[in-house]
Amino acid sequence: MDVLELESFLPYRLYRLADAVSREFSRIYKDRHGLTRPEWRTLAGLGQHGSMTATALGEQSAMHKTKVSRAVAELERRRWLTRKPDENDRRIEHLMLTGAGLAAYREMVPLAKAFEQELLAKLSAGERTAITNGLGALKEALGKD
Amino acid sequence: MDVLELESFLPYRLYRLADAVSREFSRIYKDRHGLTRPEWRTLAGLGQHGSMTATALGEQSAMHKTKVSRAVAELERRRWLTRKPDENDRRIEHLMLTGAGLAAYREMVPLAKAFEQELLAKLSAGERTAITNGLGALKEALGKD
DNA sequence: CGTAATTGGTTTCATTTGTAACCATCGAAA
DNA sequence: TTTCGATGGTTACAAATGAAACCAATTACG
Image (cartoon, rainbow over all chains, first blue to last red; front, side, top):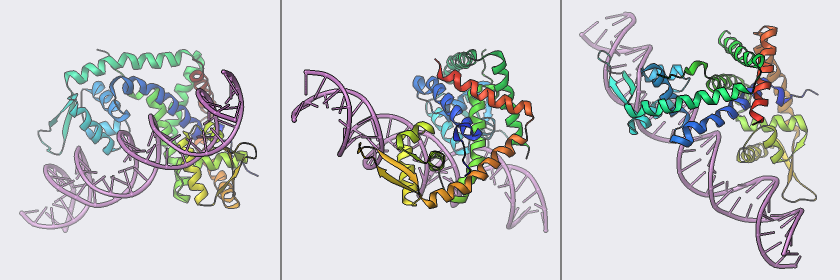
């Protein structure tokens, strides 16, 4: 009889780990500011790049366009970002953080980095390169088909 | 100014990858049988262990008890599993697959394994041990706190 | 040109999810 | 034994999500 060992099955291991890490990390943006993950990613994308379109945001952070649309709407409601219509193409809007949005971003960045450092600090140097490289290789593998 | 590089941020990399792999893998149970992920995991848990309680299922496959409850209800509706009340403790029910449930499981196991093999085949031997070990180490790191 | 196909983004609707409240049963302690 | 806290599991409600339909503006092309 053929049995699948769930615990060692790669898709399951990956998902479980990502879920645990993500849940833990979410405390930084959810508990402190009541943000959802799409909202956090939107903030992070704009904080990193300054100004982006909704489409670019979706591509950078792997979000469906409806998620982006809703996240942007909520951040706008909070006055954390503003939209500026494109000069040449009136379908496009350029998004950027307001002062308040930038302030929130600047407050969270060090917390995010600290979170990552704390996690990595529990690993040996070899283990750190192992995940980094392993994840990189797997990402490449998924791409080429 | 302090910026967070989202692309290389561990929680993000992990989640993105897990999401992509999981989405790809879901074709095997979603497209073929219309199962949700909790339903697939329930099937996989019972197929692997023969008989389990709902609580045990939740622990093994990292699912909230409401997810388990609903997945079990749906699989029961399909007549893919049955419940047997515990002799001594009437709160507990032992779950096990029916013939139909087992048949579906046996059909999917080779597909799941093939999926994993195909993915791993795109990596070098070194990269394969890198993810395996990296994920293992990270899981340990999350546990100890 | 004028029409069709594409693109950027929003909205609607059905499904999935999480939280919390809930019901029943059990075990321990008074 | 009664009572209280814990445990196994379900349900109700609100929020998050995905798919598909949609609107408007733009581009491609006959």
